[in-house]
Image (cartoon, rainbow, N blue to C red; front, side, top):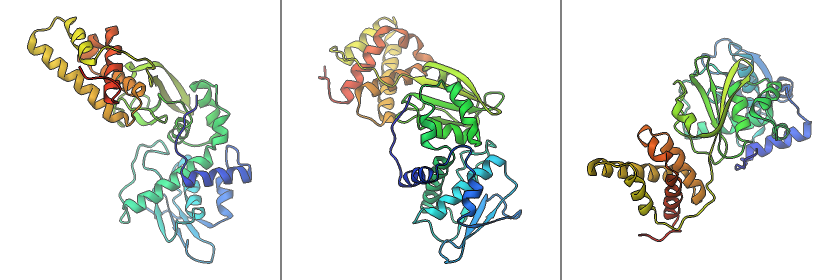
Length: 332
């Protein structure tokens, strides 16, 4: 169950460091960082996780570390700061809020910094990607191939990172179609993570898991990572078929079976076609099989389309409509 995603320069740098130092979970990131800078705990950093000084100086840089964070967040912060030290274009003094997407499971986004800007966020994103690759090495993730999500979560505990950090790294190694939701005791979404080339069914943080999200899955289940529950699902990502009947004809046949009055029929026709067009735009791909799957998944989330989607002809419509978006079908 592996996916493919573009490797960023900072991730490649992290992979080289992992290989050169033979790093294995749990990575002693504190000892690793101490080779490059002095670390001092500071209780007066406010919401900032750390502040790095002296990246342009010849002397050893100084890292002020906020000790009032969870163990897992501090570990991620240390790996994040290591990134600032080793990535050549990260220079100066940087106030750090490692990824506000809940790396310690507290669901508390970082406050905006006075230095917040597109360039600043880009540096922070790069440092986050580097940190994730150091703490949850890709070669470790490769050993999880063939394991179920439940089994992989058990193995991932050895990394000693938060559930969100672990699932974010793990999701990047999964095949298209997989989604992982880290949830609280009452199934409120803390964070969600998609495998490469996977379309979100509308996940949102801070809300209880919507059954409609799960209805699009061809397989799903629940796992545990440390003290967090993880809901996983796998959606259809490809409909490797073709049809010769134009999509409008298929849609008309579908609606004929619904026995609707003309106004209701017209409204449903527009709704279905609108859902298909929206799914095509959101899928960000020209692959008809992937677009067809996106249409099918999007329609399955709409309560008013339940009966239509249950009709076997809807799958044929999704394929035909996707082919038309890609220019592979003749208009009728």
